[in-house]
Length: 98
Image (cartoon, rainbow, N blue to C red; front, side):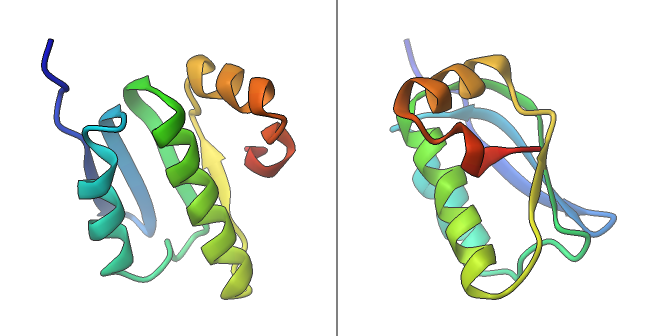
């Protein structure tokens, strides 16, 4: 089964992430996010993410680290339950509070 494309768009001062965040797709989103400033309103909307694996959790953690390094507030909206479950399993859920 092939991975569905993942995407990152900026809309209304926030980032909107959609699709599958997996080992096969996160690099595209990571590169896109590195090329732009952190979201102006400090929100990354994950409501349109339909599948996630540990690579997706790692990507979101990297955004949290980047925001902290830049002194920017950051919150995650619409985090999929599967991502929450993985974050809990890995003991990093407190880093991804939305």
